[in-house]
Image (cartoon, rainbow, N blue to C red):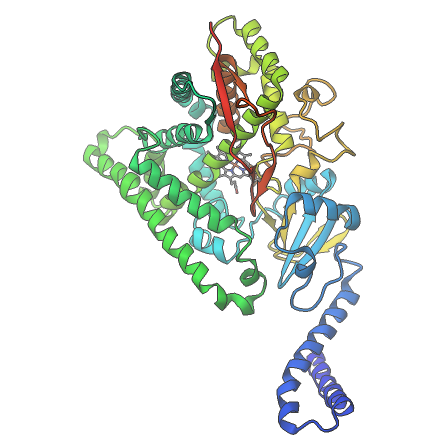
Length: 528
Ligand code: HEM
């Protein structure tokens, strides 16, 4: 009814305007201009109407215009720094209208507690966009699926083979073996500097593929390694890009994304076929051949078993493999790259870690089980994740129903991001946050943990907290600790000759913050 009234009013206004300004206007021109003008005015009225009645309830927001919302003001690159600077103007929770979508930004520890913990169920879903629909088969995975039975089942099935202390104990020797191979390779590499990323990437792929499939890659030249890294990196580029936002924010423009989405579909098909043909099918054949006698020896055996019991589908199995490829490898690799770059720029930190290892371990090798005895090394890792939070806005959350936050109404199906980087880098809460200073976690921040059972400090949530928090923390922290400990105790890491500092500037994607230029580092062996 209201719409009818507004439309009739518009009709009247439109003919008056056209007659007033263009008395000689022909009927044809009137007919052509009318729908456009009417649509524009309707949207203008509609947005003024709705904002005036709801401003008291919705979180603060820059004034928006029809169709685009705030998109024209904020642009595509909605990174953690831009959103942190906007929080100065709009407060600890604010709303951006991006075309037809709502983005709610949370920049305060109290409100982060609400989203991640107190109202963890209400905000425990995930938004997807047109591209993520393709890459997750409309949510057949775990990371990007809505909060509900499917997510609960997938998380339970993935926990047993990936995310328990038993898994860590079982695999830690294998991790150490893969890390020793890196140390040996770097010792042979008598050069004026290496881009260590590639070698560490091979190590992480081997760690994860041995855990998943009991298989590894021979070298960085192994054709399967080249294929796996190429397919995963193309997937990352297509998913992380801001290029497709227009089709996501404005449904009318979606037809123009057809080419982009076809590219995503082709890649996804090839990628899932790669995981299936080279890895999953081989395990299936082995399981079938062994029959009753088959001994479960890697994660995918557990997952296939869950499929055979009818708990999940064949597609779900592949999406678990896809999730591990995406969530586990690059995040841990980015953290290693940041840590190494900061250690090169802070030789005194390297020196202190080395001394701690010598004093505590007295010549014994660093292992997962003795990491707890090395608080300064632990503090260095925490400081790396604080200053260079690899997923600075966490993975976006979503409220399936309308919800309340900080006294405001959050419209249903809003994308809700917690600015974890800003929580950990806001000078209001941290002393000189821009400084890389591991000592802070032994001095003024000595009780701050990445997660602390029960009591959580919501200023420091690099892995999230609560239902949708990162289950991989149980693997990521020890892997990071042992590899950095081994590198520091075996090498003095320096810049190449003539270079004073490593460039630690970052590059953001939709979900990531990684070092912009992969560092070239000289690894000078420390003679025993
Ligand atoms: C330094 C390395 C890592 C960082 C910084 C990291 C960070 C995160 C963050 C911030 C989230 C989202 C939390 C939220 O939305 O509240 C997440 C989710 C997730 N991570 Fe990690 N992660 C890392 C390593 C890993 C590893 C090694 C694995 C697996 C082996 C993993 C598996 C996952 C999964 C499956 C989820 C989705 C959880 C869900 O939606 O229920 N991550 N991670």
